[in-house]
Length: 233
Ligand code: CTP
Ligand code: MG
Image 1 (tube, rainbow, N blue to C red):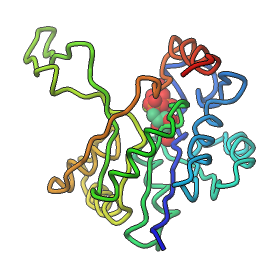
Image 2 (cartoon, protein in one colour):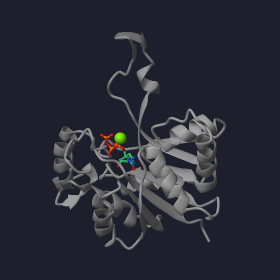
Image 3 (tube, rainbow, N blue to C red):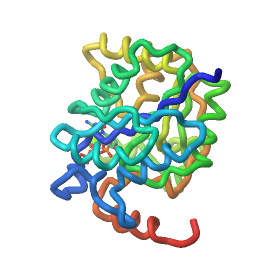
């Protein structure tokens, strides 16, 4: 039997930059909460067996109500103060599962992840232990130090990361074990943890989608509403 695939939808943040007075994943776009869009995308994917939702403390009931109608919802759990802590909470749920289980970590704040993107991550996971989703940067990105340009990496080498990020469970478990033993731990995403603590593991990057935006600031909610209601993708 093929290894099982678990999608973890990370909704443990409170959406400070959005400033909506409640976690941004509870805001409705196209008539459904952002969280419902994200969970629904994985629930509908034939390659995904289970969905685990990690929710901000104090909002578990909302998350459970949103996730319950989806048949693949396996657990709705409380996250931590940082995205890393929320990921660790999800890994605890998967304690005891075999190393070859495939786990996808997705930002709940990305409601428009679609089947082709998930397909590409799952296909790449057949060959690789860690997979990221990226889109080319259309802006020039520079390193600024003290208000002046310190360096200008060539634009064609720069990629903006999205989610889902996919891993063999054994690999991400090992990376977090090492990370949690490091008092200087810092990272913004799960590939960052693998890159830092398992530097010999190549992280395969597959093509993302401009539609797979992360709703972060009020302007993104306007864009998301538009994307949720447009007729043609
Ligand atoms: N996340 C999480 N647990 C945290 C922090 C973030 O699961 N403690 C999740 C968010 O819910 C989101 C994703 O990680 O789906 C990306 O984080 P971000 O866009 O930064 O969301 P927030 O942390 O909620 O927003 P902000 O940083 O503006 O407060
Ligand atoms: Mg955040």
